[in-house]
Structures are given as structure tokens and as C-alpha cells.
Image (cartoon, rainbow, N blue to C red; front, side):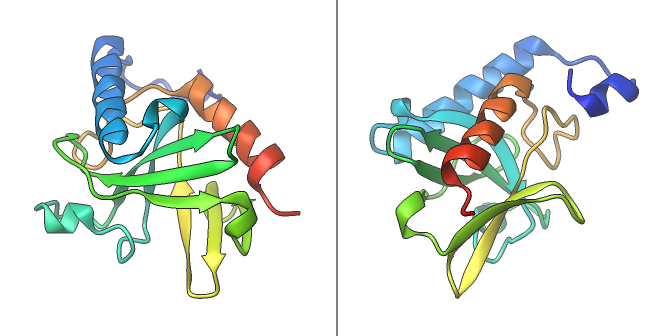
Length: 161
């Protein structure tokens, strides 16, 4: 369990449901990202819904944008695919390549987020946790190891100094 989970005694994680959702995430991602199986995946969300409005288009009332976030260590690429909490579909992928971005960093305030500025016209803030249990807003998936791997990749191979 992550640091938050050690102190917070919430409901038990349904590992079967988590595994099923991870499998759905993989299928959606592979459907829209060329060589998608070459990417590791986490679930994330953003409040920058103007950029990732797939949920609004497909009937979600939330102001949270659900994201399937993939990263390929070999190419130094992050691919972000918007989705909805029930994983019934997804939008097109946006790609962020280390050599093509303006800047990227991890923000600790006001929330813990991975922030990427592809250019001067906007940014994407990816929030990700080891698991979230509100299925009306987020994809239900346990991802402690995957999140640790993404954090390491982002901080050591992707973030700008």
C-alpha cells in the first residue's frame, strides 16, 4: 500500500475488479496507440477538461477528465488517452515526446501532479494515485507498482531540469 493507504483505513481493494479494469484499459489503449503494447500503463485524471473532454462528449457530468497514461521508456514518449470511468470507450491519443516539449515537472502543490507543457499554449496536469474508490468519477484500479515505475520514469527520464 502507498503512504496514504497506510494511514487511511478505507474499503478493501477488490483485486478482481481492479484486474478487469486494468485489462479494459490495456485493450482501449492498444486500440488507439500504435504499438500500444510497448507502453506501460497507469490510470490518471486531469481537471484540464477543455483539453480532454471525451467524458463530456459521451455523457459524463463530471469535471474530471479520466486518462489512460502510457509511457515508453525506449522512445521517451508519454501517450495520454481520454476515457470515461466505466471504460466503455476512449478518445484519440495525445503524444508527448521528451525532445518536443517545452517543459515537464512534478508539482506537489496544490495537488501531486505530473505537469507537461508541450508548448506555450497550454499544459496537461496528470494526477495519479495508487488507487481511487469512487467509481462514479474514476477508474477503479490498484496501481501502486505501476505508479512508482511511472514516477521514476517521469522524474529521471522525462522531466526537464
